Length: 303
Image 1 (cartoon, rainbow, N blue to C red):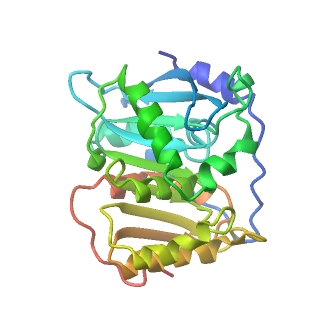
Image 2: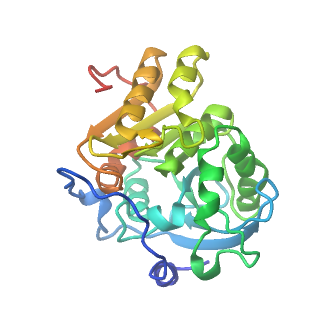
Image 3: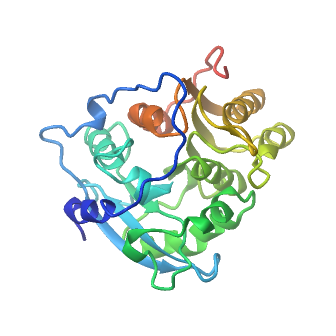
C-alpha cells in the first residue's frame, strides 16, 4: 500500500489539461472540510495496473484510496471517479478528494468509503507510461451513451478491487462521479445500470453532442424513473462550442430530472469549465449524496 508522498511524486509529472478559462467571475473558496484538520486520520493509497477486455488493447493505472477507518471485517461503500488520478486524487488539487473523504468519514457524515480513481485507458501496452493516460481514448470511453463503461466497472474493476478489499455489493452503497466527459460517463453508467450505482456526481458534465449525449434530457423524460440520486454542478461560463452549450445541457438535464421527480440537486454558479466551483462544494455534495433521509423539494432548483 502506498502513502500520499508516492502519489504526489507521480502527479507532479502529469501535464495540465486544457480546460477553457472562465470568462467571468470564477472565484470559489475552500471550506474547512477541504483542508487537513488536526486529529483526523488519513487514509492510504493502493494501486494496480489493469489491462481491459471491454476496452481492448487498453491498459490503465487504477488507484484505490482506503480510509483509515476501513476494517476488512466490515464491507465498505464504494465511490468511483473518472479522470480520477488527474483531477480528483490530489491533496492540493481543486477537489482534494482524499482530504474531504478523511474529514467527512471522521465526522460520520458519509460512510466508510473506498475511493476508486480511474483514468482513461492507454494504448501503450506498458500501461500508464509515466502516469499519463492516452487521452485519445478518453472520449470513446466516457462520452459513448451505452452500457460499455458500466460493464467495464462491473466485469473488471470492481471484481479486481474486491479481491483485496471487502466492498459492499448493493447499489445503494455505491456512487460514481466525474468531471466534464467523466461527468456524463458517471450519469450514463448509473442510468444504464442502476443496479450497480445509485448515486451520481457530475461536475461541468458534457451533456452535449460529442457522441450523442444531448439525447439524455429527452430520454429521461420518456423513460420510467430509475432509482438513482443525481448531483449536477455547472457554471454560466462553461463551454459553448461545436458540440453544444454546456450550461444549457446541464440545465436541460436538471429540468428533465425535476420533471420526472428524481432525487436530484443542481448547483449552478458562474464558473467556467474547471473544478473550482465543484471542488469548493465537494463536501456538501458528498454529504447530500450519501445522506440517508429522503430529498426535500427545492424551489427553482433548475435555473
